[in-house]
Structures are given as C-alpha cells and as structure tokens.
Length: 420
Ligand SMILES: *[C@@H]1O[C@H](CO)[C@@H](O)[C@H](O)[C@H]1NC(C)=O
Ligand SMILES: *[C@@H]1O[C@H](CO)[C@@H](O)[C@H](O)[C@H]1NC(C)=O
Ligand SMILES: *[C@@H]1O[C@H](CO)[C@@H](O)[C@H](O)[C@H]1NC(C)=O
Ligand SMILES: *[C@@H]1O[C@H](CO)[C@@H](O)[C@H](O)[C@H]1NC(C)=O
Ligand SMILES: *[C@@H]1O[C@H](CO)[C@@H](O)[C@H](O)[C@H]1NC(C)=O
Image (cartoon, rainbow, N blue to C red; front, side, top):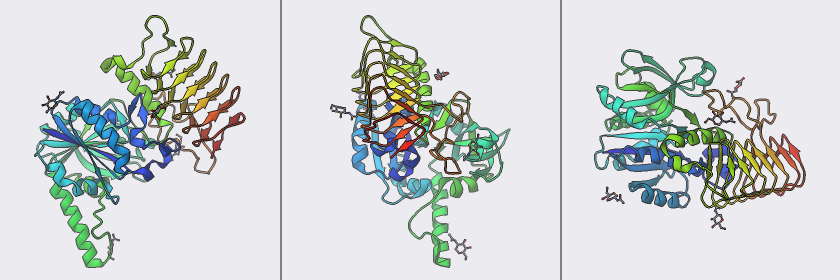
C-alpha cells in the first residue's frame, strides 16, 4: 500500500497568482478543466495500490471540503485534508502529521508540491526508489538551463549510482542544471531523520535561547535534503517528461496546453470533437465543459479550455486561453492568450488579447516562473491578459496585456495596465 501527501500551502502563498487566487484557492484553479491538484489525485489513483491521499496546508477547511468529498467519490479512495494552524514548513508539516502518514504502515509515500503541473511518472519513480538500496528519499529531477536552475533546488549526482551527493536550494551561483521538481518518494524511515532535525533545533533553543522553540518549523530542502546529500540515502530519478511550476497566473496558460496534450492519449473523451450538427469549429486541442454553451459559428482553439456554465456567442474566436465558469463571451469577440475570470463578461466585437512573452512558452523548458507583474525596476510587465471574476468588458473595446482585478466594470480600451 502506498500513500501520497500533496502540499497545498495557504492563501498568502498565492500572491503571484493574483487576481485569480482572490476568489478561488490556487490549488483548485482549473487547468484543462480540472482543479490544479486533481491532476495530482488522478496520477495517484492511476497507480492502483495508492489508497490514501493527505492534503496538507493552511487554507480554511471550508474551502477544501467540497473538493475533498468530490475526489473521494470520484476516485474511490481515502482523501483527507489536514490543516496546519501555523506554517510548519514542508518537513515540519510532514513531521507534525507523521502518525497519520505512518498509519496503516504504507510501503512508502509520495510527497507532491501542489503547485506543480506535470506528466507525473509516479510508477516509475516508485519502482526506481525500491531498487535503491537504503533509499530514504528519491527526488524527481529535471534538466534546466543554467539561468533557470538558480531558482530551484540544484543537485550534483554520482552518475553511476544516481545518488545525490550535493544539494543546494536556490543557489546564489551555479551548482548544477539538474533541478528538484518538488515530487518525491519517501520511505517511512525518513521520520527519524526529521525528528533529529527537530530535536537539534529544540536543543539549540534551550542552549542559546534563540531559534524556533516548539513551532516545529522545518524546511524540507535546507534542513533535510541538503544534509542527506552524500549520505548514500538520497537518489534522483531524472525525467524528461513535461514539468512546470504554476507560480504566476500566466503559467496557467502554459500548463493548460500541456494537460490538453496529455488528454489526447489518456483521456480523449475530455477533448472536444465536433460531431454532427450544432457543434462549433475547433482547432485542437480544446476542452469544453458539457454544461457550457458554444454557438456553432464560434471557432475555438488551439489550446483552449472552456469552463462550466460558460456562454460563447456567434462568431467568437478564442485561442490559447482559459475561460472560467459562468463567463460570457458575446458575439464576434476575440480572446487570445488570456484568462477570463468566473462570471466575467466580454461584450460583442471586443478584443481581449495577451502576448506570450518571455520565457517563450514554445521553448521546451519554459517554466514561466520568471514572469511577474513587475520587472525588477518596478515597471509593469504583464504578458497574458487576465480578468478576475465578474469583470465586464464593454462592446467594441480592446484590452491588450492587462490584468484586471475582480468586479471591475471597464468603460474604455486599455493597454499594458493593471486595473486595481
Ligand atoms: C471502492 O473501494 C472499496 C475498498 O477498496 C471497494 O470495496 C469498493 O468496491 C470500491 N467501489 C467502487 C465503486 O469501485
Ligand atoms: C543561536 O545562537 C547561536 C550562538 O550565538 C548561533 O550560532 C546560532 O546560529 C543561533 N541560531 C539561530 C537559529 O538564530
Ligand atoms: C498548443 O500547445 C501545444 C503544446 O501542447 C503547442 O505545441 C502548440 O504550438 C500550441 N499551439 C499554438 C498555436 O501555440
Ligand atoms: C455558475 O452559475 C450557476 C448558476 O447560477 C451556479 O450554481 C454555480 O455555482 C456557478 N459556478 C461557479 C463556479 O461559480
Ligand atoms: C528573467 O529572465 C530574464 C531573461 O531570460 C533574465 O534577464 C532575468 O534576470 C530573469 N529574472 C529573474 C528574477 O530570474
């Protein structure tokens, strides 16, 4: 029996994801028609022998309850949300809930960062973990560019054994282009190692009167993984599968297209194929929720997801975009490289457009985590256009490279602005 832990963080973690995280917790943001972490749940369920998933984070329980119930029903497995009342750090959270994780004596457990989007090679990762003698941790790794690597955990390995010999989290200068993807297999024997780190911190507190007494805050990367490097107990499985991190709202567009691509082979029924009369024209890949209404003269795609209750009018053209629940796009409008928030309205003959900017999403390793609202010099740097929930775009206007916070009623065309 296996288990998985999905680390979902809390509301204050999603700031770079605004305005989309203002009305929906980031882990539940729909990508290719499914809440972000449902893709994790699905990958776990596909393993067959994975019987329990624990979500750990500090969102209020009420925000996760419905999702947890839905997932239990849909995947017929035990799924629980364990709320941290203070931020404990990744390893601190695992340690705090160690009894629940160990309960039932699983053979091992996965730990998955909730903000990762990927073609998760979980079966391969577990098989690899089992093959390593005395492995406590197996890390999923991928190759980045030198520049990108500095934003991640960097690993030096023994090429013959795949052992991690050196680990540095977000190094200030180049260490390695092999980076930590935030997906792991842990053996239960990792708990004594975390306990040691915990106890060392407590002792230091009592000795010096400083440090963090009893808060139990332990960072996985710096306090557990770095010291484990070179001990012969930590390994890396390097994958060339698609992988990215959903840090900014813009990176959702990138993740969306990749999940749609995966559907082609795994869940073709989730991709829209026009059939008979009444279907609209599409350029694959397109996902349309069955409760959405799309006019037959609309043209959608490529790389478009249409959410539940959405209404798309005659002659509308949408490319490379995500349209969230209950939004309306009125006739003859154009939406490109944009995210339209829940319940928003795009008036007729309007243009809502973003620009795919650096990093180029067409590059194979475009993590998009380097796209933020502001440049380092404070100038605004929006790329794709994002409308928060219940925004109204009037007819015959143009919105180019804009970010609009929820509940705004726009009255004119706007370019390169954040509308607060
Ligand atoms: C759900 O899982 C339980 C326990 O593993 C099993 O007994 C039951 O038949 C499953 N139900 C469905 C609908 O698959
Ligand atoms: C606590 O104080 C000791 C001795 O002054 C120092 O070496 C250590 O780094 C401090 N620890 C923290 C967590 O501040
Ligand atoms: C759609 O996404 C796929 C990747 O899944 C990409 O290859 C393709 O270029 C995208 N389409 C456009 C028009 O960018
Ligand atoms: C969409 O609208 C329907 C009907 O008003 C409502 O029941 C549903 O909760 C809305 N969905 C979302 C995600 O807001
Ligand atoms: C973002 O990428 C650009 C160009 O690729 C680079 O010059 C810049 O330093 C990066 N910024 C951060 C914060 O990594």
